[in-house]
Image 1 (tube, one colour):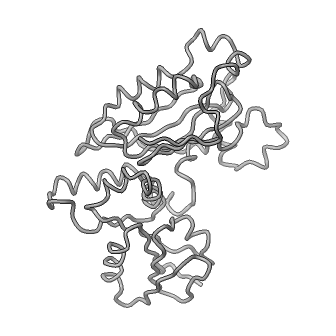
Image 2 (cartoon, rainbow, N blue to C red):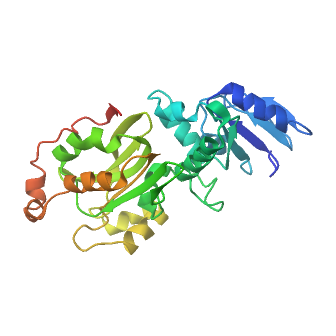
Image 3 (cartoon, rainbow, N blue to C red):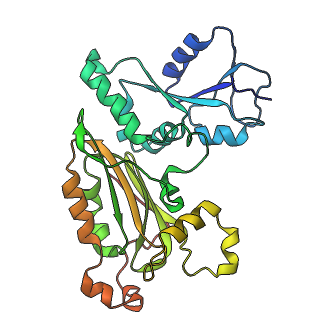
Length: 304
């Protein structure tokens, strides 16, 4: 069906997507689709998908060679969109999964400093190199495959801060739960995975943009019999083997945070205080499992 010249435009804001489509329409057949179950055929297409579609969904539904996917975001609405608890996660994923992000228009006031701030912010949200784009690797679980979930740039660039927290010790469930509001203050996007002392066999995912969503993803590989490892993604198995710890096995924390003018040192220290202390660690898993666990629901969603 497709050729390398096929282009798909996605984005939550139809007016911005339509403007980019108008400018790119020369010499192409422009097709608007209502859903991904019926896709057009032919070379050199410019396809505009519904505003709630994510690039990875497009690639999964596209027969043949995946198209180039461009996410369109209006510059004057980007910050508000990322802070919106209804659409923040969707807009973030559209940016993270895109081959290219097109900032349409100018920020309010047309200030060049603010325009550069938005460009830096988009790059911090999706810092992946060209070779990684379009491979359908979930940004939230990249760390399980040994990939970066973000880049560590704690010094502000145009006010944009990006930092990564990595640790082997488990979080104390009560202390982490109490610190969630403090940890997410000033953060526009955060993602990754973590583990709790009270549930040492479970990988939890972390995603925030407007709202914070935490939920169980899978089991850790340590308890999994060796003869079943072939059923796990090979990249994850390789990453686990490289980083294997004789005590923690493959369990670890890997979280990334991106925002404007927040204090990365304070954030790191806050998360570090949520880890088990030496005394708590020495008591072992049987004691850890008895800790009161506020993360009792299958998925925990909080406003930031």
